[in-house]
Amino acid sequence: MTKTLTSLVRVTAVLIGFLALWAAPVAAQDVTAEVRTWDGQSWRIAQPSLEVFYTIPAPQQGGGPDRYTAGPSGNTPGGQLGTGSATLPVMSGSVGTLQNYFQGPEPRQGHRQADYITVRRGGIERQIPFASIASLTFARYQVPSTLPAFYVNRHFRYTATVMLTDGSRIEADSINLGTMVLRGQTASGRLDLPWEEIQFVSFQR
Image (cartoon, rainbow, N blue to C red; front, side, top):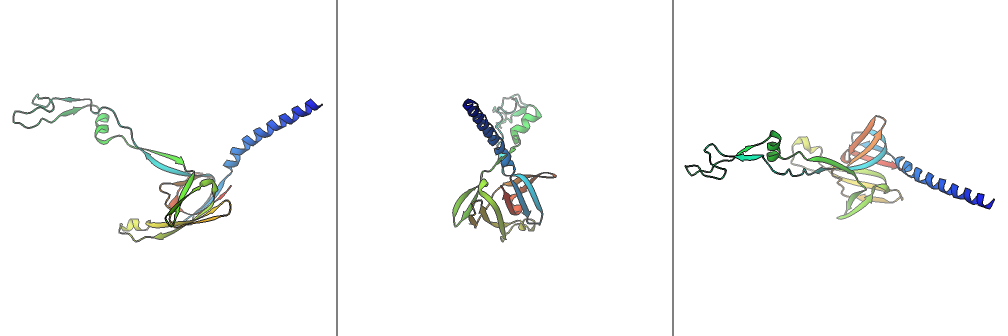
């Protein structure tokens, strides 16, 4: 009887362990966010994340044009014409090779999830883990600019109020999240919102 009871306890413990491992990722996916933009639009998104976009430098192509050929005079590249002027080399090769030689391949775009955001106050920077953020409220102030009128309306200085999950509050007098976007899922599909379009976002964890 004792052995049977001990075996039952062990089996129960193993089952609880498996349930805990299974529930952990499910709980992480249950995070949602309420978002409001400056133009008054609102969304409720599931599985929110902060994504940083960046450019991946194109790899250097080896070689160059396939070969050099002699100039019209029969001189080799670098040789001299009878008049004393330098001979121009003639390049040959495929169109793609020549385009890559002069222009280089197109850079690729990459992105990754951000684990934290950086805020500033009084010249001091602070990194705040994304998982610790309960809500973000942005304020923006138009900055005088000499840019054309088309760009002036988007020239702002941003501040932010960050509420943390532990109830504490951080006031930032400067914030610039670069190319970061808030990504999530809506009923109609994926949504990517650049951070400067967001007025307020709160997370339900």
